[in-house]
Amino acid sequence: MAKTLEDAKEAVYASLNADNEDIDAAIADLKTAMNEAGEKEAVFVPERLSQNNRAGRKMMQSYFKKRGVKVVFEA
Image (cartoon, rainbow, N blue to C red; front, side, top):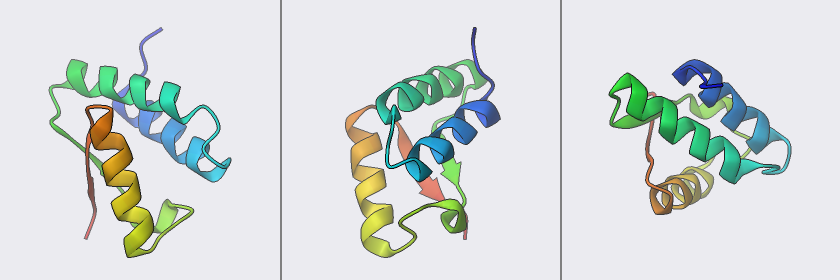
């Protein structure tokens, strides 16, 4: 079953907070949801990340980019 973009982002947050458990599956679902919604970037709230520092955000962007998802953060 296809997830909505918000459901896919919630799954990513849950995975990140569970020590990256099933993160690759969550990213794949996010990528599919983004394609279906016509979105080019996934926007995340930094305060909801387990590693909310510059290094953690950059690591997340790099990891997701390697899997075809561009990540940006709310200001």
